[in-house]
Image: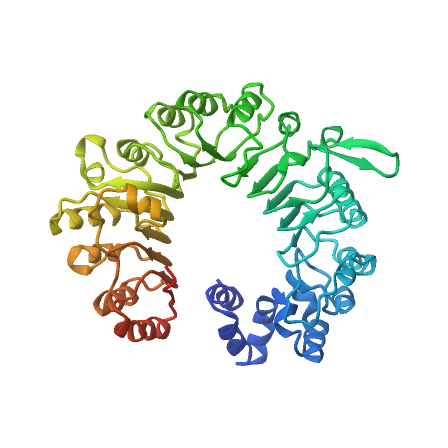
Length: 500
């Protein structure tokens, strides 16, 4: 490894403030670290000083790869000097002047963004943030046809009308990944159909070829029937990732529709699946998991109660060696089924479960944990017998997961806290926390819930043994201790989030 490689390796672990200090050390450090320092650039952070913003963009624009751009910022300056952009995020901060709707919906704004896209042939991803108006039909059509490298579009709380929906349909025929969060549709639109003004005919999503789409994600939509119909989901012949999460009141897609689609062989390349299941019976779940023909790598279910272990046994039998991510966090799973997965899925990297009883962790009949490659674990360990010895034995088991970078203990929701059987695993040193000194890769530690708090002894121990720790989420002692404990963490480069 030469000096440049060492510097770039160090740069990966530094915040921008520290990088800026390193850049000032010498011309050599400046030349090697400036590309990393300006790899990500947020116009909104320097928009209060337009001269400084323009100077930085002119001088370092060729290094910018990931850019956040306010719609009122100097888009033309970015288009002239930013030439290697890979990801563009568009947002509109209320602190930057006024926001007249006519300005943000005007064709000039979108034409300026198109010019920026054209000057960056490597652009792969565009994000329309929460405060950004929905793009026009013309923009969506042109951005998809004129940006050869574009693969991904993300929409956050945009409201589409008939014409922008039509542009969206056409854009989705040319990209690989699309994500919607809180998307809404305005007006009286026939389900999955809009009127094409060019032909004055009804244009349906079913009329377009979406075979290029590899990833589709829609969370908490309003009126998603404009896109998601049983016929439409069958048309996603190349889909590898399908995520659909609805609000409690919305039921636009049935689990049975997905099961029938998979059973019909419509998604032969499926590798990742996330669904809100609600009242789907175990028999439907067993059919769903048994019908996936490919090698499933990621599986996530929410709002479901498994009455039996059978669906999960099918999951293990068919996908034990391909699964790397599994989330049943907001799903009620029999405790012993949770333990069965811990000893049967050897290649898991990320795992989120609900409540796991201490007896199932310590029960020798269940066998040793196989998921020793875990880097992220969310779990609630409960039903301890009240003895410190039990907690220490549980921590000894957790200490075997030496690759962990993220560990979350405790009930993340009120429902989990109510459903799990107390007492929960304590996060104090006297309960065995000290056995986790083997987790030298740990970067994030989360402990939320009643009875979860740490004192000065735990904080000092963490910064001493978890040298890579950067984030703590949970209560820090009593109110009079919080400031002292926070200062200890900040001095050691650890951020504390107490908003639990």
